[in-house]
Amino acid sequence: MKEKDIFPVDENDTDVMVTLEMDDGNDLDCEILTIFDLDGQDYIVLLPVDENGEPLNENEALIYRYFEDEETGEPSLDNIASDEEYERVGKRFEEIQDESMPASH
Image 1: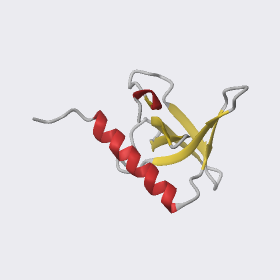
Image 2: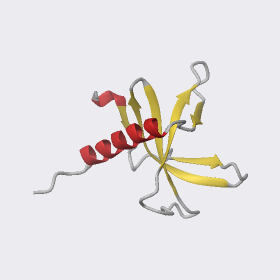
Image 3: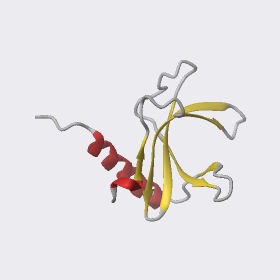
Image 4: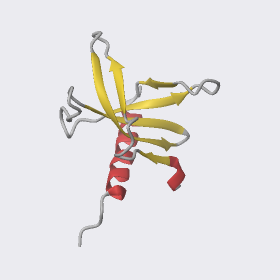
């Protein structure tokens, strides 16, 4: 995968939060961990956070298909439909995390 296919989010960037409206009508604040491409489809990885911006669970990230409207640039998310797709995307996200970790000596 080419470097330009991964869009790491700078921790100093102030535009790294989104609010999702859940099926039950509640809002869930999330930090954007990354957006990446896999097989021509963009995916977004979100980490749910509390009102103070602290992770609700460090090990629980949400992964969605990510789209931007070609005319307006408006982002939208879609659920990943199959277990197979989710496994491929989850594996790629783990690889991205491993690549971004500093090598230990």
